[in-house]
Image (cartoon, rainbow, N blue to C red; front, side, top):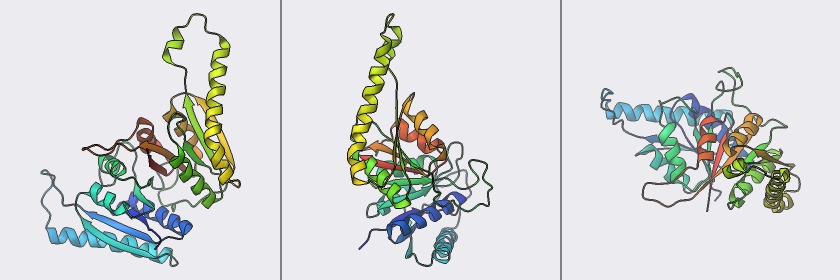
Length: 296
């Protein structure tokens, strides 16, 4: 049986955008779509208590409306739905375990309402080794009107992938190249670098040292990409070796991206997973959908 693409919904515009993106992704993968609502009972003292049955009816309404809209818009797609009680991040991580990917809505920096944003969304990313894609709603970037439907793939938009040449990037590159091949677009591989801080104090630094380091970085990135170019010869591949903080360079290149792909190291710890600073910055500030890929 083909593993599903799973999407979390909560009734907010962010999750509706995520559901639409997930449906199109499921069609690309010829996979079923699973729509999940995490039924987390409110535990905020300042909020007036809500009748549990009323809360569950609301949760069922959210789920029915989301899955029903997807079935109408994508009649060729197999859509299932389920409501699961429990802490939202934990529910989403469990649902992701047997999925090809987990898709969530994201508001980016500065919003607090809704269970898919902030600490819960970040926690869900850290709790699963399954690829997680966070999707911003229309109207939050590039001056898009709020009533504009979620954008489809547009010719010319690349999959932008942040590559750390000092770590095992195979899982990240495999995902990026596979997504580009499915969409018929290119891959833009980005690596940001800078000279060690101590070099700024060198009184007579040979000007050729900077170029030598840059050439070495470019060669290392090309070597990382070489096997994936061979596996995906139809995918146009570009390299961006840029001076500056890696997160800033990925965000700059991601302005016109179809999808942004970043990695996070798998760290087994009692408190859960950990997001590196690059993944954290891109998740909160990129306007394109962001895929976070766990790797060793």
